[in-house]
Amino acid sequence: MPEKDVVERARQDAQEGKSPSTQAGEFVHEEIEHVKQGKHGARSAKQAIAIGLSKARRAGVDLPPPKSGSEKMRRQAERDSAKGQNPENPAPSRKRSHATMAALKREGSQSVSHAALSRQAHSAARSRTAEDRSLAAEKAVRTKGPDELRSAGQKAARTRARNRLA
View: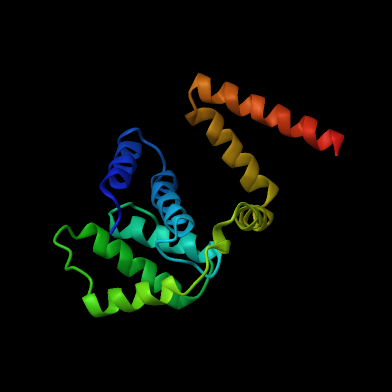
């Protein structure tokens, strides 16, 4: 079950008109924190992210199923979304819930180390086309406020300077 403040932050993102992926990011962040705190582990950064996205769908975030990946994964994402749209959700089976947590507790927490998350972000970015990245940047310019735009520009300038030195 996601924590109340996470659901509240996601709801606030929705009211501000932010995208479903931004809303889901709150759940992903929570899941990564859980692994870091040792509440449970994850086999990979990708698994921690998938758990967070699943929680987001079950909490009612209107996140579409992934375009790539297995048919089984897409069907599960659709089931999660359906559960999120139904307000009188039945609680998950205790037996299954305990089994899942027991399995996750046996996994390590290195999967969400700074290096592991960096590798995951890098590989995810590599799979995107230049056009995708460009469209995302244009949308960011439209949706960010002036303060966020300024800080994003400063961060980009720092990155460019650092890459020039390297």
